[in-house]
Amino acid sequence: MSKAAPAKKPAATAPPPGCSLDINDPQVQKAAIRIQASYRGHRSRKELRETGPPRVLEPLKDVVLIEGSAAKLTCRISAFPDPFIRWSKDGKELRDGPKYRYIFEDPDVVALVVRDGELADLGQYSINVTNPFGQCSDSARILVEVPAKIQKGPDNTKARKGATVTLTAAIMGEPAPNVGWTKDGKDIEEDDRRGRGAAAKAGPGAGAWAGWGPENPREWDEGGEPGGKEQRWLRSRAREARKLTRGPAPSPRRVYFEIGSTNTTLTIRRATPQDSGKYEVYVENSLGMDQSFARVDVA
Image (cartoon, rainbow, N blue to C red):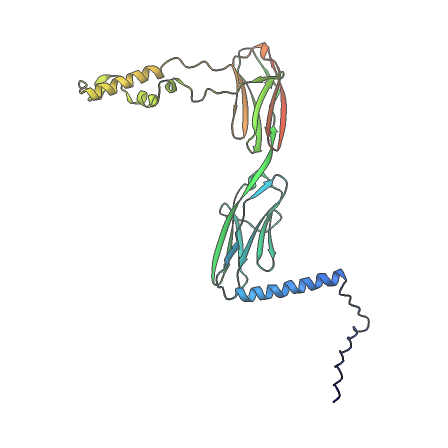
């Protein structure tokens, strides 16, 4: 019995005239990848149709934004039909435009790009996803880092002997910068007198006792004689605290500086010709430093 002849393989179909397709061509391979991704996206959307309301699959994460650069908040969601996306900052809606860009990355990734970073971009950002079946939301913070800088330096100043001189500089930076002042290269001390009055020396609650106690002991009983050991003890404690808080105030420094959230001020009290000179203010944080100078002349 003779064996059947093996089946012949069909001959390869030649490409149409004028068309040559090389599967090893990188462009052909990229096109194939896009087709496969599109098919996977189609399958993913078909499956998501069964899930109903939108869901957050991968939440937003906090992002650090360097001044002048861009930051991107990314969130992976599931939603079918296609949802309505709304981004907001600290409760205020952000419009898609040059500053804020809405990005849609198929099949289920959405993002917000914040451009030209500045300190004002610091805050909490939220995404709200809505479709006919419901809604979901998520939030994250953008933390802004700004190199320390002096936005406006102190002005050159001329003053008469005995006057009070103030030099002020507008400053900024995140993290909050260290601030210092010098005169002719020598450091000037910061004002540390806040919260160090006589009431603090009187012990805990001394300020409260001073406010409590009456000037006249008869005030305890609406004009009558004070009565009871407890009242006499309260009256004596109040009188003691009042004496402490009425002590001589500490002598303020003649030259000192203070630091606010957006400025720093150097104060020279009872200026003398010896206070004339070159004053420098400097700021510094982990991202950078800045300095400015001013001349003071006292005559």
